[in-house]
Length: 331
Ligand code: CO
Ligand code: ZN
Image (cartoon, rainbow, N blue to C red; front, top):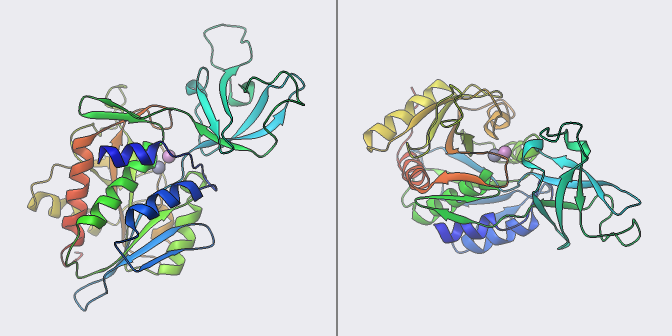
């Protein structure tokens, strides 16, 4: 799975510009289903199996977009000012590198602060692409880019940009490859524009009309930052109880916990005070549906070097397969 994860995280596809990552994923899964489609917002929707009388239509999402930058202004000096696609945290900007979809690379830094140790707000940062004037700058307003940082191994942990949420894309691909004999109609959605308010999952849920929905995403593991929201790397997938955007259906939480216990899969419970996932919009699509989420603990979320533990990745695949392979009786 590390090879797959490297391929997925080293592809540049910010929110709204998912075509490159969609093609990488399509190549991985094209032999697994004859029912693959792409909707108007670019969601890649893959249906596997038929709904039997013992089964439900279950929608599972992993978002394939990543946070990025968008050129807003080119200065006379050739320096490029930018806005954000999704949440960019200023403390990760100075010294970072970006690559644009047209192949142009640049380095980010900030205007001189009055105190050298201070990080300024995002609009006081610029991208230097080596241009010496506005005229010879190879970027124009509206060009988009992402952090430029390769995949590395750190013991049993790995680091890359866009683990959020390519790690869940890898989990979903692996699950699709391994799952057999599910009584459910499974609709796996590699969703678009999650980082800009889950636009893709909104239209996909409307079209699919599932009976039950599960989002797969990362959760910021603050185990080393002294904040008392506990999900820790290496302790298994986190079953979401609540985040800023959603209260999971308690029946779904119980079903997930019971399945993990029965299959001896380590898990944690997540109560999160920052951020949300595609589950937020699926839960209230049309007349609504029972919804939950599995989160993979991740350090330094939305930085160019996010870190996850491979044990959590494998355990999430195991839990997802156990959940989807059996009849679902929510109670
Ligand atoms: Co994110
Ligand atoms: Zn995410």
